[in-house]
Image 1 (cartoon, rainbow, N blue to C red):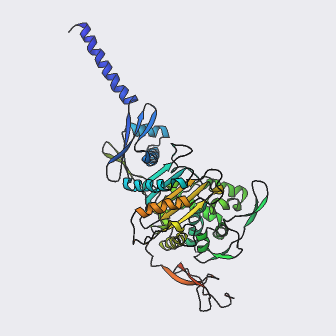
Image 2: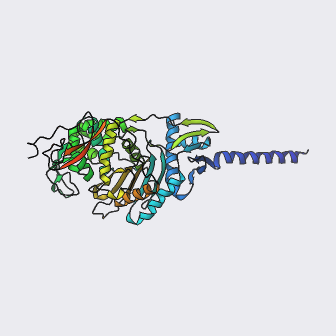
Image 3: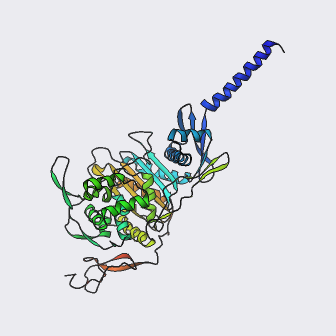
Length: 460
């Protein structure tokens, strides 16, 4: 072999080595995503410095959510910063096994497409089982096409009331179904023009009458929610949300320390937390009303594998946020929201046990419906563009309804715990009904925490 041949062989070997190294360091790197049936449904690829989601368009939100979870897992496991975690996932060619259900995703997208003309802004929805597993999610960005609004922080509006006020106060034994609180302003504040106005405002005029908390939740009276928060205790609510849902209330704690409790009444009772909430997390929070009071943070990743070896397995234990009795009583209160007289009767489905809550924020920028069946939790949100002058949660309610209707859950009901009783009560007083009561309704109570007997003097 002559010198020229030897040089040629080394040159070819060098080129091959360069190609291999280029592929390793600059070529395509892939993270695979596996659905609940065990099939690869998407991948995340890195070409150079650019990350691409390789999936169907309607799966983008779910893939984006899984990528965020995967990065967070590696950051926590390895002590990495975000960029290091991303590079680690690609270098290891990780495989993420998820709870993604293509059939459920298709039904969610179909429900949105049927009602998309009724919602003129951004849209997001997330579907979980009743233990925090994210089965499907969908996002439509009209302001930012590539934004994932399932993960975007925003205001919860009145969907926060059962989580921050009514549920915790009932768990503490401070309120029950028929506790009576006034529908009247709590204080006076300045509006945007500097005029003094009563606060909080309802979507309907004040009645200046006492309301049962169950009726107030059904009609979403802001006045009663604020009064209920004062009864329970603002600091109690802050602590409850931080300890049980891991909600970031650090800014509310700072405001309380500097300016006093009244400065955060709207944050807690009316859903204006400074850190905001996400659609993904709100669907997770509402599981407590469907599964007997336990909470596991919403999650899409079941496990992660590296070259066939398990690197991560989701094992977070459920936290008992409410007793089964409190959870069921709240569930029955939320069921009245979807009945006649509630704010979302269009969410009801014949022969399916449905409960839920509407919510809006100032200028109707946020429009929510979050509902539960015995099998699923579905949170639906859309943002209105400027110029909305009335509650606009109708679209969210209809998307929820049409999605749940496709899930075929006829005959399934939430199970009533042994420690809950359904009793007759006086509509005027909220006490246990007597023979002298002219108008009688019903309520659900813990067997250990029922109202007192109504007296003839109280009904006069």
